[in-house]
Image (tube, rainbow, N blue to C red; front, top):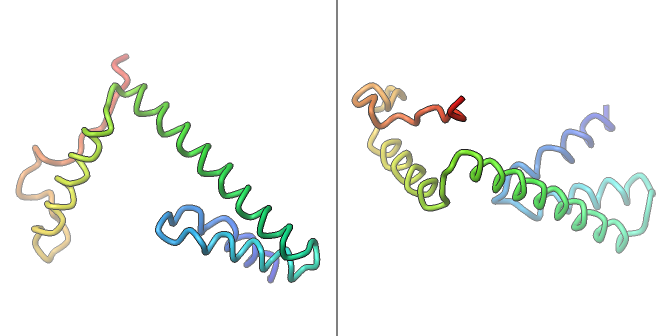
Amino acid sequence: MLLIAAVVLTVMPPSINVMLIVYQVVVTVLLVTFRLTDTTTAITYAITLHLIQMICWIVLGSWSVRQTDSSFSQLVQEMRKYAHKKQAAPEDGNEWDQDESDAPQEITDGS
């Protein structure tokens, strides 16, 4: 059970970009707790592993933006529009009922 919890804690935090240090702490504590390495090596390993994962996300994200003929400014504009709609949404939780034209559209590759 401890091993399953360790794997879940190691996989989940990288998806939370706001709490960057959580991933390094979890990996370091797990490696040191199971006596697989010393603290300095564990910290170095955690930072390197997180860096590799972030580089993969950046490369794949850049590739997908290029494939959809989008730009970073378009993505930021859509996110701001979505955040504004979400703040102004009624309390029933269905913010797209008022105006369907502002809902995010599915992106197709044109084929």
